[in-house]
Image (cartoon, rainbow, N blue to C red; front, side, top):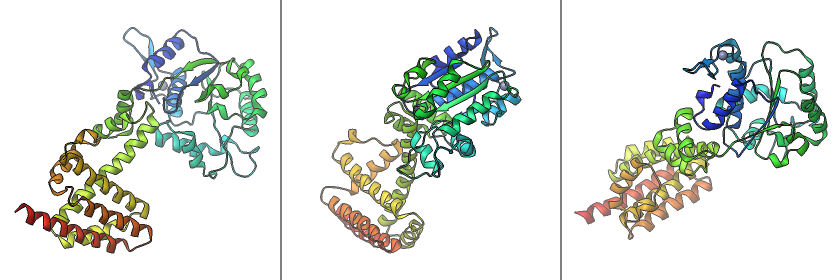
Length: 388
Ligand SMILES: [Zn+2]
């Protein structure tokens, strides 16, 4: 990861670059700030930067980013550098004292790549599949691994990097040992502790670190990160960012739901077209195709169909300011609203609600959807007559 891959936190990144340029690289740093504020991505970009063999220079000759191409950069970007050590909460579900971050490294790399370094503790715990009620912590076996690594000579890097993610999950039993290693720093070793909860880190450890505070992102920063880092379409990224509270993880969740909504919106549009045209072969096709989704997804689709009808009603009765959807969805709802009014809305709702009810009770999906479709056809037929 290079600094250029990160759009937000520019001031903080500039300070890190400047300090490094002046040779001020604190041997223990505490990156703290709310969830989804880019702490881990910045830590990685920083580690890669200070170890890069061929740093990119600004026009006045100051190093500003890692090259992304030298052998050190490539190993860092794959999280495979032998002088890069990760510790994070873990639990192998057998004996927690023996559970080690090391054993989860392949999974850690996979999740890191999937989320570009920005994922929640819960996402990580889910990925480890340790069960809902189990805690993951950084425990004795990790401490032993760390001490073992510190005893070895550095392989090739200028700075050995130790990243402790979710440092508030460091077990009490190892904090004394850890404190000692922070007090007597190994030359050339940089500890980066990352936390959302600095108050839950033992004060003696906290006081040994240089504090680096991350603020939550602005709406527009979340929007830009979603577009450029996660390939979310600009239209959806804008709405998701508004609902993200400056948290990329939230923004991404909202955007992904929204992508799903967008897909279901398209399904809904087709469905209504078939019903309006009483196109029975297409209706049968559609009903059959939906069978491939899980019942939960089908229920979600039907619930979002309820929303579609409600939206039409709001538009019809000029309350569209309450609607937060993409422009494309708004255009459809506006057109479709000529068929949805206070005299038939209950029929639409009742058809959908019954279908949800029967989906829940293991009804046959193609039959249920075909049945609902034919009832929609009837309503539209009545509307056509009324409009003529
Ligand atoms: Zn490099």
